Length: 298
View 1 (cartoon, rainbow, N blue to C red):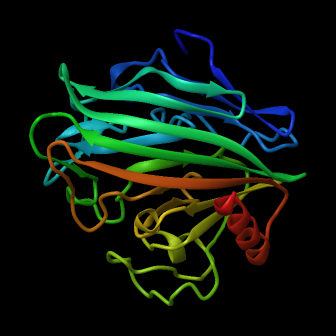
View 2: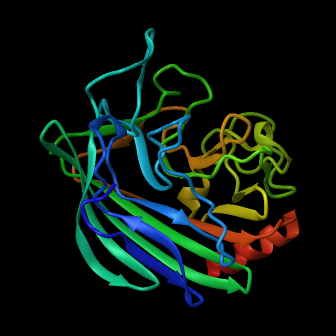
View 3: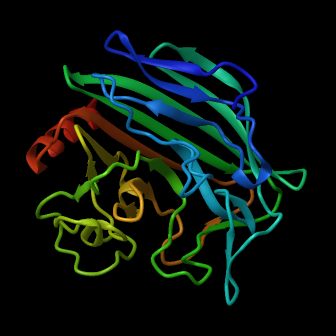
């Protein structure tokens, strides 16, 4: 599925991820670089790519459903008053090259293009860091610059009329297993009792409904023999509500456009950093919080 061999990411003496830079995919998949498979240190695979339920889900990476009306997520496009429809509106994230590529990480330059026009330039940094003998961290920072020569904005199905579907930004598709994964957030995280507005943080409860649509320092997804803990590593990243799915399919991402579209004026840049703890076994709330503190500080 790639026009060149994947880039390997290593941590603690083993390969923990493969990064496909130029996937050979149909346009309606919104072709883009992605990490898959990503594994725990013991070798458990914790990503999924091209699953039957959502063939445009590609492991771990960056995807946005609406960039100035162009679909960089893949699949159908949600259109207000029409619903999800198949449109010829997909963009491509083109890998332009690595500025640095080491065994434990890389710095990459990308172009987001659609209809022959480059809308955004991306600078992406990915690094792997060992935390314990059973956990490591994937540190991903992306900065997007408006290169279109005019003001742009980013949207989501939610901003286009589909409630609860504010996905767009960082996204991690986990493997679907026989048992629905457990979801939980930080305890005592601020007592938010409804969908997050800008600046609200934390729900501090268990379950998909308790963390989806809230802004919190971190969110955990625990499956059969593995736990993923997703943490916002900057104040701006922590202000983005989390998009969480568990029952329908296992996936966690950020919501760049939650209550409204994200404006990106001509020439301006915005930056987000998400650090993901990848752990063998099950973590409780205190264990997840401890690893997040270590991961974000490293």
